[in-house]
Length: 431
Image (cartoon, rainbow, N blue to C red):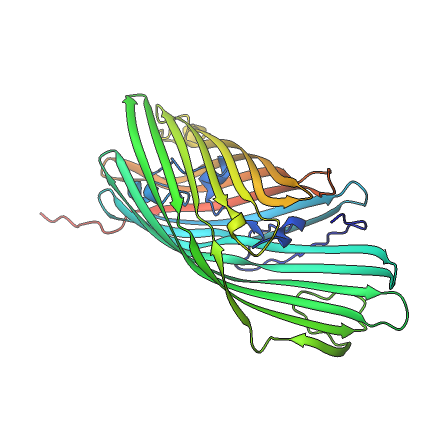
Protein backbone atom coordinates (compact mmCIF):
# COMPACT_ATOMS: atom_id res chain seq x y z
CA UNK A 1 0.00 0.00 0.00
CA UNK A 2 1.37 3.41 -1.00
CA UNK A 3 1.24 5.78 1.99
CA UNK A 4 0.10 9.04 0.42
CA UNK A 5 0.65 11.20 3.47
CA UNK A 6 3.68 9.78 5.20
CA UNK A 7 4.63 10.49 8.78
CA UNK A 8 6.75 8.54 11.22
CA UNK A 9 7.08 9.92 14.73
CA UNK A 10 9.40 8.73 17.43
CA UNK A 11 8.53 6.08 19.93
CA UNK A 12 11.11 7.71 22.18
CA UNK A 13 11.60 5.62 25.25
CA UNK A 14 14.51 4.64 27.45
CA UNK A 15 13.82 1.52 29.47
CA UNK A 16 16.00 -0.71 31.56
CA UNK A 17 15.81 -3.46 28.96
CA UNK A 18 14.09 -2.56 25.73
CA UNK A 19 14.24 -3.79 22.17
CA UNK A 20 17.41 -2.24 20.83
CA UNK A 21 15.76 0.81 19.31
CA UNK A 22 14.68 -0.87 16.06
CA UNK A 23 11.76 1.54 15.44
CA UNK A 24 10.84 1.26 11.77
CA UNK A 25 7.85 1.35 9.45
CA UNK A 26 8.88 -2.20 8.51
CA UNK A 27 8.54 -3.37 12.10
CA UNK A 28 4.76 -3.62 11.62
CA UNK A 29 5.28 -6.97 9.86
CA UNK A 30 5.64 -10.31 11.65
CA UNK A 31 7.34 -10.04 15.05
CA UNK A 32 9.02 -6.77 14.12
CA UNK A 33 12.61 -6.00 13.19
CA UNK A 34 14.89 -8.82 14.35
CA UNK A 35 17.75 -7.90 16.67
CA UNK A 36 21.18 -9.49 15.98
CA UNK A 37 21.77 -10.15 19.74
CA UNK A 38 25.49 -9.56 19.61
CA UNK A 39 28.20 -8.28 21.96
CA UNK A 40 30.83 -5.61 21.28
CA UNK A 41 33.25 -7.72 19.26
CA UNK A 42 30.59 -9.01 16.86
CA UNK A 43 28.99 -5.55 16.57
CA UNK A 44 32.24 -3.97 15.41
CA UNK A 45 32.85 -6.83 12.97
CA UNK A 46 29.61 -6.60 11.01
CA UNK A 47 27.55 -8.95 13.21
CA UNK A 48 29.76 -11.95 12.46
CA UNK A 49 30.52 -14.80 14.82
CA UNK A 50 29.49 -18.21 13.47
CA UNK A 51 33.15 -19.23 13.11
CA UNK A 52 34.66 -17.04 15.85
CA UNK A 53 35.79 -18.11 19.32
CA UNK A 54 37.73 -16.08 21.82
CA UNK A 55 38.83 -16.93 25.38
CA UNK A 56 37.97 -13.37 26.53
CA UNK A 57 34.69 -12.62 24.68
CA UNK A 58 31.19 -14.08 24.67
CA UNK A 59 29.87 -15.01 21.23
CA UNK A 60 26.14 -15.74 20.87
CA UNK A 61 26.20 -16.54 17.16
CA UNK A 62 27.54 -20.05 17.81
CA UNK A 63 27.18 -21.81 21.19
CA UNK A 64 30.19 -24.01 20.34
CA UNK A 65 32.43 -20.97 20.85
CA UNK A 66 31.93 -20.96 24.64
CA UNK A 67 34.12 -24.06 24.83
CA UNK A 68 37.14 -21.76 24.48
CA UNK A 69 36.21 -19.39 27.33
CA UNK A 70 39.07 -19.35 29.87
CA UNK A 71 37.85 -16.80 32.41
CA UNK A 72 34.58 -15.80 34.00
CA UNK A 73 33.35 -13.15 31.59
CA UNK A 74 30.61 -10.55 32.09
CA UNK A 75 29.38 -8.49 29.14
CA UNK A 76 26.80 -5.72 28.96
CA UNK A 77 25.92 -3.31 26.15
CA UNK A 78 24.13 0.01 25.79
CA UNK A 79 22.85 1.07 22.37
CA UNK A 80 22.03 4.57 21.11
CA UNK A 81 20.06 4.92 17.87
CA UNK A 82 19.37 7.71 15.40
CA UNK A 83 17.00 7.32 12.51
CA UNK A 84 15.63 9.19 9.48
CA UNK A 85 12.86 7.92 7.19
CA UNK A 86 11.60 9.30 3.89
CA UNK A 87 9.23 8.19 1.15
CA UNK A 88 10.31 10.61 -1.59
CA UNK A 89 7.19 12.75 -1.20
CA UNK A 90 6.83 14.07 2.33
CA UNK A 91 9.20 15.67 4.81
CA UNK A 92 11.60 13.12 6.32
CA UNK A 93 10.98 12.15 9.96
CA UNK A 94 13.74 11.54 12.51
CA UNK A 95 14.21 10.19 16.02
CA UNK A 96 16.87 9.20 18.56
CA UNK A 97 16.70 6.86 21.52
CA UNK A 98 18.82 4.70 23.81
CA UNK A 99 18.30 1.26 25.28
CA UNK A 100 19.97 -1.69 26.93
CA UNK A 101 21.32 -4.29 24.56
CA UNK A 102 22.53 -7.83 25.18
CA UNK A 103 23.89 -8.80 28.60
CA UNK A 104 25.42 -12.11 29.59
CA UNK A 105 27.93 -14.12 31.59
CA UNK A 106 30.17 -17.01 30.52
CA UNK A 107 31.86 -19.44 32.91
CA UNK A 108 34.54 -22.06 32.18
CA UNK A 109 33.42 -25.30 33.84
CA UNK A 110 36.37 -27.55 33.04
CA UNK A 111 39.15 -27.48 30.49
CA UNK A 112 37.58 -27.08 27.04
CA UNK A 113 34.07 -26.89 28.51
CA UNK A 114 32.11 -23.72 29.22
CA UNK A 115 28.61 -22.33 29.56
CA UNK A 116 26.89 -18.98 29.18
CA UNK A 117 23.56 -17.35 29.95
CA UNK A 118 21.87 -13.98 29.83
CA UNK A 119 19.24 -11.82 28.21
CA UNK A 120 18.97 -10.23 24.79
CA UNK A 121 16.33 -8.35 22.79
CA UNK A 122 15.04 -10.61 20.02
CA UNK A 123 12.79 -8.29 18.04
CA UNK A 124 11.35 -4.80 18.17
CA UNK A 125 8.18 -3.14 16.99
CA UNK A 126 7.89 0.63 16.92
CA UNK A 127 6.16 2.87 14.37
CA UNK A 128 3.67 5.71 13.89
CA UNK A 129 1.99 6.19 10.51
CA UNK A 130 -0.60 8.53 9.08
CA UNK A 131 -2.47 7.90 5.82
CA UNK A 132 -4.98 10.41 4.40
CA UNK A 133 -7.21 9.59 1.44
CA UNK A 134 -10.75 10.03 0.07
CA UNK A 135 -13.47 7.38 0.14
CA UNK A 136 -16.28 7.76 -2.44
CA UNK A 137 -18.93 7.07 0.23
CA UNK A 138 -17.43 8.51 3.43
CA UNK A 139 -15.44 11.40 2.04
CA UNK A 140 -12.07 12.44 3.55
CA UNK A 141 -10.55 9.81 5.84
CA UNK A 142 -7.38 9.73 7.92
CA UNK A 143 -5.97 6.50 9.34
CA UNK A 144 -3.49 6.67 12.22
CA UNK A 145 -1.36 3.60 12.96
CA UNK A 146 0.79 2.96 16.00
CA UNK A 147 2.74 -0.12 17.06
CA UNK A 148 5.03 -0.86 19.99
CA UNK A 149 6.60 -3.68 21.97
CA UNK A 150 8.96 -6.50 21.25
CA UNK A 151 10.21 -9.96 22.08
CA UNK A 152 13.02 -10.70 24.55
CA UNK A 153 15.09 -13.85 24.89
CA UNK A 154 16.51 -15.50 28.00
CA UNK A 155 19.24 -17.90 26.89
CA UNK A 156 21.39 -20.64 28.40
CA UNK A 157 23.99 -22.59 26.48
CA UNK A 158 27.06 -24.77 26.73
CA UNK A 159 29.94 -25.85 24.51
CA UNK A 160 32.67 -28.47 24.60
CA UNK A 161 35.86 -28.81 22.58
CA UNK A 162 37.55 -32.10 21.73
CA UNK A 163 40.86 -31.56 19.97
CA UNK A 164 39.98 -29.48 16.89
CA UNK A 165 36.20 -29.84 17.04
CA UNK A 166 33.87 -27.76 19.22
CA UNK A 167 30.16 -28.47 19.64
CA UNK A 168 27.53 -26.53 21.52
CA UNK A 169 23.82 -26.09 22.15
CA UNK A 170 21.66 -23.24 23.41
CA UNK A 171 18.10 -22.96 24.72
CA UNK A 172 16.18 -19.71 24.36
CA UNK A 173 12.95 -18.68 26.04
CA UNK A 174 11.24 -16.06 23.88
CA UNK A 175 8.51 -13.92 25.39
CA UNK A 176 7.01 -10.51 24.86
CA UNK A 177 4.03 -8.43 23.79
CA UNK A 178 3.22 -6.57 20.57
CA UNK A 179 0.51 -3.89 20.41
CA UNK A 180 -0.93 -2.48 17.18
CA UNK A 181 -3.49 0.35 17.13
CA UNK A 182 -5.49 1.95 14.33
CA UNK A 183 -7.71 5.03 14.56
CA UNK A 184 -9.85 5.99 11.54
CA UNK A 185 -11.05 9.60 11.57
CA UNK A 186 -14.01 10.37 9.31
CA UNK A 187 -14.39 14.04 8.40
CA UNK A 188 -18.00 13.79 7.16
CA UNK A 189 -20.66 14.66 9.78
CA UNK A 190 -22.92 11.95 11.13
CA UNK A 191 -20.22 9.32 11.54
CA UNK A 192 -18.26 8.22 14.59
CA UNK A 193 -14.58 7.43 14.29
CA UNK A 194 -13.38 3.84 14.76
CA UNK A 195 -10.55 2.52 16.90
CA UNK A 196 -9.11 -1.01 16.78
CA UNK A 197 -6.39 -2.42 19.01
CA UNK A 198 -4.73 -5.81 18.53
CA UNK A 199 -2.56 -7.29 21.27
CA UNK A 200 -0.33 -10.33 20.84
CA UNK A 201 1.45 -12.10 23.70
CA UNK A 202 4.18 -14.50 22.55
CA UNK A 203 5.99 -17.31 24.33
CA UNK A 204 8.17 -20.11 23.02
CA UNK A 205 11.14 -22.29 23.89
CA UNK A 206 13.58 -22.60 20.99
CA UNK A 207 16.83 -24.51 20.55
CA UNK A 208 19.91 -24.07 18.40
CA UNK A 209 23.14 -25.95 18.01
CA UNK A 210 26.56 -25.13 16.62
CA UNK A 211 29.76 -26.71 15.40
CA UNK A 212 33.26 -25.30 14.89
CA UNK A 213 36.23 -27.01 13.26
CA UNK A 214 39.65 -25.47 13.91
CA UNK A 215 42.44 -25.99 11.35
CA UNK A 216 46.01 -25.06 12.26
CA UNK A 217 47.41 -24.50 8.78
CA UNK A 218 50.83 -23.42 10.06
CA UNK A 219 52.32 -21.46 12.95
CA UNK A 220 51.00 -18.21 11.47
CA UNK A 221 47.56 -19.15 10.18
CA UNK A 222 44.51 -20.71 11.81
CA UNK A 223 41.23 -21.29 9.96
CA UNK A 224 37.94 -22.03 11.72
CA UNK A 225 34.84 -23.32 9.96
CA UNK A 226 31.52 -22.87 11.72
CA UNK A 227 27.93 -24.01 11.27
CA UNK A 228 24.72 -23.32 13.21
CA UNK A 229 21.22 -24.74 13.04
CA UNK A 230 18.02 -23.69 14.78
CA UNK A 231 15.14 -26.11 15.19
CA UNK A 232 11.63 -25.37 13.96
CA UNK A 233 9.43 -24.86 17.00
CA UNK A 234 5.86 -24.05 17.94
CA UNK A 235 5.22 -20.56 19.26
CA UNK A 236 2.26 -19.91 21.56
CA UNK A 237 0.30 -16.72 20.95
CA UNK A 238 -2.53 -15.15 22.94
CA UNK A 239 -4.30 -12.47 20.92
CA UNK A 240 -7.01 -9.99 21.81
CA UNK A 241 -8.88 -7.36 19.80
CA UNK A 242 -10.86 -4.29 20.87
CA UNK A 243 -13.02 -2.43 18.35
CA UNK A 244 -14.68 0.82 19.45
CA UNK A 245 -16.61 3.73 18.02
CA UNK A 246 -15.31 7.02 19.36
CA UNK A 247 -15.18 10.77 18.86
CA UNK A 248 -11.42 10.68 19.44
CA UNK A 249 -9.48 12.45 16.66
CA UNK A 250 -5.88 11.75 17.71
CA UNK A 251 -4.23 8.41 18.38
CA UNK A 252 -2.99 8.17 21.96
CA UNK A 253 -0.04 6.10 23.13
CA UNK A 254 -0.32 2.44 22.28
CA UNK A 255 -2.44 0.62 24.83
CA UNK A 256 -4.11 3.79 26.15
CA UNK A 257 -7.69 3.64 27.44
CA UNK A 258 -9.86 5.80 25.21
CA UNK A 259 -12.10 8.23 27.04
CA UNK A 260 -14.39 9.31 24.16
CA UNK A 261 -15.91 5.88 23.60
CA UNK A 262 -19.40 5.86 22.12
CA UNK A 263 -19.86 2.11 21.90
CA UNK A 264 -17.93 -1.14 22.13
CA UNK A 265 -18.24 -3.06 18.91
CA UNK A 266 -16.09 -6.04 19.88
CA UNK A 267 -13.82 -6.89 22.81
CA UNK A 268 -12.39 -10.30 23.69
CA UNK A 269 -9.84 -9.00 26.21
CA UNK A 270 -11.31 -11.18 28.95
CA UNK A 271 -11.11 -14.28 26.80
CA UNK A 272 -7.97 -14.17 24.62
CA UNK A 273 -7.80 -16.36 21.56
CA UNK A 274 -5.04 -18.95 21.84
CA UNK A 275 -3.20 -20.14 18.76
CA UNK A 276 0.08 -21.68 17.69
CA UNK A 277 2.45 -20.27 15.09
CA UNK A 278 5.47 -21.92 13.49
CA UNK A 279 8.80 -20.49 14.54
CA UNK A 280 10.92 -21.31 11.46
CA UNK A 281 14.14 -23.27 11.39
CA UNK A 282 17.34 -21.55 10.34
CA UNK A 283 20.82 -22.54 9.30
CA UNK A 284 24.07 -20.71 8.75
CA UNK A 285 27.74 -21.14 8.06
CA UNK A 286 30.90 -19.13 8.48
CA UNK A 287 34.66 -19.04 8.17
CA UNK A 288 37.25 -17.17 10.24
CA UNK A 289 40.96 -16.78 9.44
CA UNK A 290 43.48 -15.65 12.04
CA UNK A 291 46.93 -14.46 10.96
CA UNK A 292 49.71 -14.39 13.55
CA UNK A 293 47.15 -13.66 16.30
CA UNK A 294 46.92 -10.13 14.91
CA UNK A 295 44.50 -10.06 11.98
CA UNK A 296 41.15 -11.90 11.99
CA UNK A 297 38.89 -12.03 8.93
CA UNK A 298 35.38 -13.47 9.13
CA UNK A 299 32.47 -14.21 6.80
CA UNK A 300 28.98 -15.46 7.78
CA UNK A 301 25.86 -16.53 5.92
CA UNK A 302 22.50 -17.23 7.57
CA UNK A 303 19.08 -18.12 6.18
CA UNK A 304 15.66 -18.45 7.86
CA UNK A 305 12.37 -19.42 6.23
CA UNK A 306 9.97 -16.82 7.64
CA UNK A 307 7.23 -17.68 5.14
CA UNK A 308 6.45 -20.52 7.57
CA UNK A 309 5.49 -17.88 10.13
CA UNK A 310 1.80 -17.36 9.34
CA UNK A 311 1.34 -14.03 11.13
CA UNK A 312 2.20 -11.89 8.10
CA UNK A 313 1.38 -12.58 4.44
CA UNK A 314 4.39 -10.47 3.40
CA UNK A 315 6.90 -12.80 5.08
CA UNK A 316 9.54 -14.47 2.94
CA UNK A 317 13.01 -16.02 3.31
CA UNK A 318 15.49 -13.91 5.23
CA UNK A 319 19.14 -14.02 4.16
CA UNK A 320 22.13 -12.37 5.84
CA UNK A 321 25.65 -11.88 4.46
CA UNK A 322 28.23 -10.51 6.91
CA UNK A 323 31.94 -9.73 6.69
CA UNK A 324 34.22 -8.58 9.52
CA UNK A 325 37.84 -7.84 10.31
CA UNK A 326 39.82 -7.22 13.52
CA UNK A 327 43.42 -6.02 13.89
CA UNK A 328 45.39 -6.12 17.15
CA UNK A 329 49.00 -4.94 16.66
CA UNK A 330 50.37 -6.75 19.75
CA UNK A 331 47.87 -8.02 22.30
CA UNK A 332 50.63 -9.13 24.73
CA UNK A 333 52.46 -5.80 24.86
CA UNK A 334 52.71 -4.06 28.24
CA UNK A 335 53.26 -0.50 29.43
CA UNK A 336 51.25 2.66 28.85
CA UNK A 337 53.47 3.61 25.91
CA UNK A 338 52.21 0.48 24.08
CA UNK A 339 48.54 1.02 24.84
CA UNK A 340 47.68 1.57 21.16
CA UNK A 341 49.24 -1.82 20.32
CA UNK A 342 46.78 -3.61 22.59
CA UNK A 343 43.71 -1.88 21.12
CA UNK A 344 41.55 -4.05 18.85
CA UNK A 345 40.52 -2.19 15.68
CA UNK A 346 37.40 -3.58 13.99
CA UNK A 347 35.31 -3.07 10.87
CA UNK A 348 32.50 -4.89 9.12
CA UNK A 349 30.10 -4.93 6.20
CA UNK A 350 26.71 -6.57 6.11
CA UNK A 351 23.88 -7.06 3.64
CA UNK A 352 20.50 -8.62 4.34
CA UNK A 353 17.43 -9.57 2.38
CA UNK A 354 14.89 -8.97 5.12
CA UNK A 355 12.01 -11.47 5.35
CA UNK A 356 9.59 -8.81 4.06
CA UNK A 357 8.16 -8.43 0.55
CA UNK A 358 6.00 -5.38 -0.28
CA UNK A 359 4.57 -4.66 -3.75
CA UNK A 360 6.59 -7.63 -5.06
CA UNK A 361 9.77 -5.94 -3.82
CA UNK A 362 12.05 -7.50 -1.23
CA UNK A 363 13.17 -5.10 1.51
CA UNK A 364 16.96 -4.98 1.90
CA UNK A 365 19.25 -3.71 4.67
CA UNK A 366 22.88 -2.67 4.12
CA UNK A 367 25.34 -1.37 6.72
CA UNK A 368 28.92 -0.52 7.71
CA UNK A 369 30.38 -1.16 11.16
CA UNK A 370 33.46 0.23 12.87
CA UNK A 371 34.69 -0.36 16.40
CA UNK A 372 37.53 -0.53 18.89
CA UNK A 373 38.17 -2.48 22.07
CA UNK A 374 40.05 -0.37 24.61
CA UNK A 375 41.89 -2.53 27.15
CA UNK A 376 41.63 -1.77 30.83
CA UNK A 377 44.08 -2.99 33.47
CA UNK A 378 45.86 -6.15 32.37
CA UNK A 379 46.03 -9.01 34.87
CA UNK A 380 48.21 -12.10 35.00
CA UNK A 381 47.37 -15.61 36.13
CA UNK A 382 50.34 -17.95 36.13
CA UNK A 383 51.85 -17.22 32.69
CA UNK A 384 48.66 -15.97 31.03
CA UNK A 385 47.78 -12.31 30.55
CA UNK A 386 44.14 -11.29 30.50
CA UNK A 387 42.06 -8.21 31.19
CA UNK A 388 38.82 -6.33 30.64
CA UNK A 389 37.75 -4.07 27.81
CA UNK A 390 35.52 -1.19 26.83
CA UNK A 391 34.00 -1.92 23.42
CA UNK A 392 32.86 1.02 21.31
CA UNK A 393 31.18 0.44 17.97
CA UNK A 394 29.48 2.61 15.35
CA UNK A 395 27.07 1.43 12.69
CA UNK A 396 25.59 3.26 9.68
CA UNK A 397 22.93 1.59 7.58
CA UNK A 398 20.12 1.95 5.09
CA UNK A 399 16.91 -0.10 5.00
CA UNK A 400 14.35 -0.14 2.20
CA UNK A 401 14.27 2.07 -0.88
CA UNK A 402 12.27 4.79 -2.65
CA UNK A 403 10.98 2.45 -5.37
CA UNK A 404 7.62 0.69 -5.68
CA UNK A 405 6.01 2.68 -2.88
CA UNK A 406 8.55 1.66 -0.22
CA UNK A 407 10.11 3.81 2.49
CA UNK A 408 13.84 4.38 2.77
CA UNK A 409 15.25 4.46 6.30
CA UNK A 410 18.75 5.70 7.12
CA UNK A 411 20.00 4.93 10.60
CA UNK A 412 23.02 5.04 12.85
CA UNK A 413 23.87 3.16 16.03
CA UNK A 414 26.46 3.60 18.75
CA UNK A 415 27.16 0.53 20.88
CA UNK A 416 29.09 0.87 24.14
CA UNK A 417 29.90 -2.40 25.84
CA UNK A 418 31.84 -3.47 28.90
CA UNK A 419 33.60 -6.83 28.99
CA UNK A 420 34.91 -7.90 32.40
CA UNK A 421 37.16 -10.94 32.77
CA UNK A 422 38.16 -12.54 36.07
CA UNK A 423 39.66 -15.78 37.33
CA UNK A 424 37.46 -17.74 39.74
CA UNK A 425 37.75 -21.14 41.38
CA UNK A 426 41.50 -20.91 41.94
CA UNK A 427 42.82 -23.87 43.88
CA UNK A 428 44.94 -22.65 46.78
CA UNK A 429 48.44 -24.01 47.16
CA UNK A 430 50.10 -24.52 50.54
CA UNK A 431 53.67 -25.41 51.44
